Length: 134
Picture 1 (cartoon, helix red, strand yellow):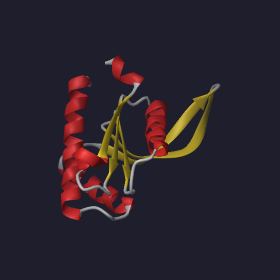
Picture 2 (cartoon, one colour):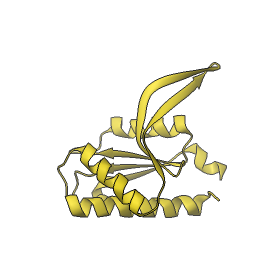
Picture 3 (cartoon, helix red, strand yellow):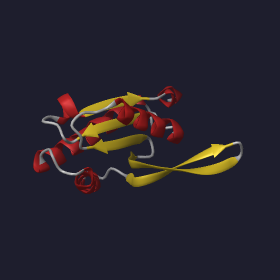
Picture 4 (tube, helix red, strand yellow):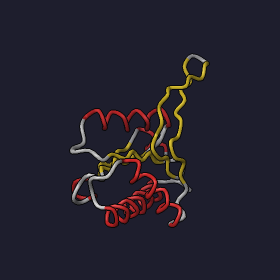
């Protein structure tokens, strides 16, 4: 059953997986490297996900391909957007919020692996209006 407790626990597990990858690899690598390693870590922890998830949009009874791809969709309820940048910019936040809205995801995590500490400096958590459907 998906509820707030489930989502909070899932965020905790996914954050732990990100920390594990960051602990082994450190900062300053390309985003694609972190994504591959994180996918393996999620598999090891039995957390289901879809990588490079295509985002479609239904507009006036027509399904449109937006050409948008979410890095990872975790357990069909959480969008995970990965970065390896000097700092998170408003465009990165707009990106994850767009993905969350179009996918109707209640929760999203923006992870910047180019940080010294994932929890303190590299993670931003987002909640959408779909969170209140639980």
